[in-house]
Image 1 (cartoon, helix red, strand yellow):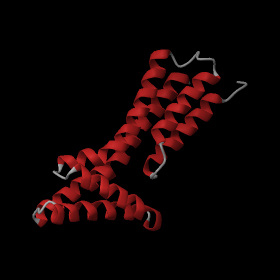
Image 2 (image 1 turned 180 degrees about the vertical axis):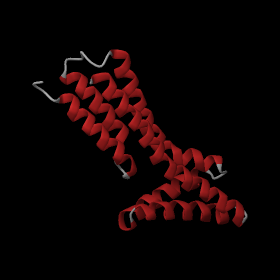
Image 3 (image 1 turned 30 degrees about the horizontal axis):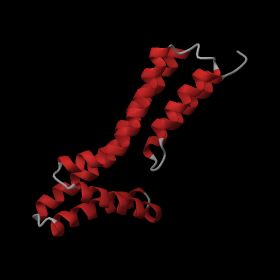
Image 4 (image 1 turned 180 degrees about the horizontal axis):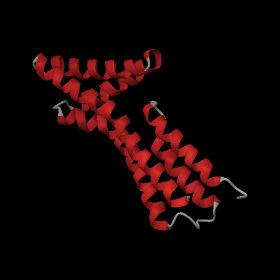
Amino acid sequence: MPFPAAELSIALLVVWTASAFVPFVPSGVLAALTVVGYAYAVGFTEPGFAVLLALVLVSLLASAVDLLSGMVSGRLGGASTRSVVAGTLVGVALLLPLGPIGLVVGLCGTVFLAALYGNGAEPRVAARQAAYAAVGVLASAFVQAVLLGAVTVAFAIAVL
């Protein structure tokens, strides 16, 4: 085997799967680029077009899940889009000095306070909205990791 492209690509896909738990890493996009890069390196001879397209689409779906899950879960819990967006921004600002705990505290605290004072909600309703937003943000990493793990396994089966 003159060029270990398959092994390198699988190793990168494993890294991108693990990086689903790291904030600000576009793991799904990186996985899609890895799959397309492999196909390009081998002259688009493998995996087949349908498999390549499916792997790229699932990788991009993983990125979309990561981006939209906090918003969707917050909305399902009854929080306004504005409070979830504000909470995400505060969480990102707190992520830098406090790490992942800052993201969760910033998001939950902002959604809670926005619901409590901005919308006049009861504390129980505000807490429920904040909890939904937090669950969505935390669950997105797991969903993204599962999707990218499936991409890694399917890619390995297709090329080895």
